[in-house]
Length: 125
Image (cartoon, rainbow, N blue to C red; front, side, top):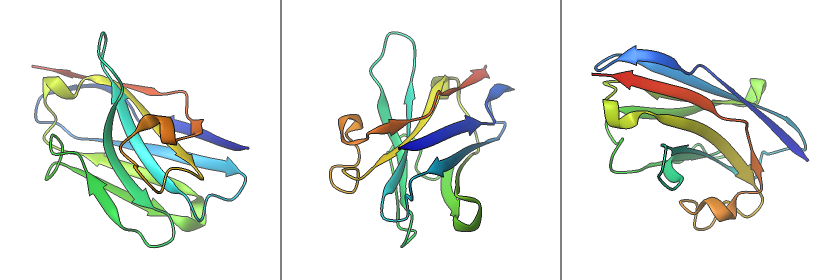
């Protein structure tokens, strides 16, 4: 089992920045992909970004490319999502997720077995 705990959400104005954290514990995730997803009210959960724990390779959804940066601290077993130039359309609950099947088709939330509880990000205009 893997436990994931997100933190760092909040209420900000458009143009502001936030940094989300996702702390992992339990079974080793060193061979997994860690993903960030978000879900706005009435919408499906959507892929935001992912990072490979061991190699550090990253990938972003087009909607956040150039504004968000994913990174990891292997010593702390923590993944971060730095969000800059936030827009009202970024408002959502943000989740981190991981699992042994997440390496392939990593934009698909069904490929992830472990999820955090989510952290709310609200961006006002």
